[in-house]
Image 1 (cartoon, rainbow, N blue to C red):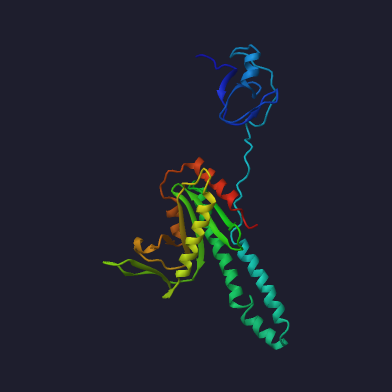
Image 2: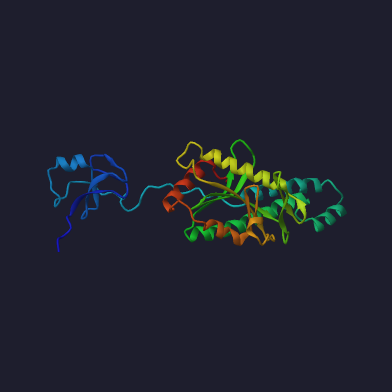
Length: 294
């Protein structure tokens, strides 16, 4: 068996620095020494006049073992909603102090979290946390990368969750309607256009669909002009503890997908053209364009 040369010219997997100070990027060719675990740039290697069995002078570098890659800004699910809840609760408490002692006691007993609109922010934060847990399992299974609580440029609003899977970027809004029946009502057709209406517990919720289409456009605009420009962007309404339609065709309304917590893994597992390296690249682009609220 022929022994492997101690030093050989190869295409580097990780970035390194030659003893002369020249940086050799990942993917470029350089002379790698197995004994000293160092890299020499090609000009220095050729100038040394050493063959493949010799070792050029170089200084050790840790780049071969630890690539310098910035951490992915994942964000914290529900952070913005919880912050808004605390702000509103403090405001409600200040207003409560202006009332009589008896009124404060009764109001605090029946409404410990303040007004119903204030309590809704706390419920929303809890729903986002549960969606984040489901997406974490998808990430741990190697299906993609999740981002949470992303800032919408120029606005005070945010995007609850993003998940970069093989089939594209899922824009996910968490909605908590406990035991609420979700349905899609269609009218028209034949000789005219078909109108679709989202209903939750029998009430029209078309505003949710409109908001989701707006969030999709935000992500599309963020990807415009980048290497991920052609990546599909899919809006999703995730109803936590909601009752979804049985038929798959009734889980879509005007281009928005409807699902529960269990349905998130099925969406994340959809096949597509993005391999793991490409998914990570897209996730980094999205994270940079839409930073977390925290």
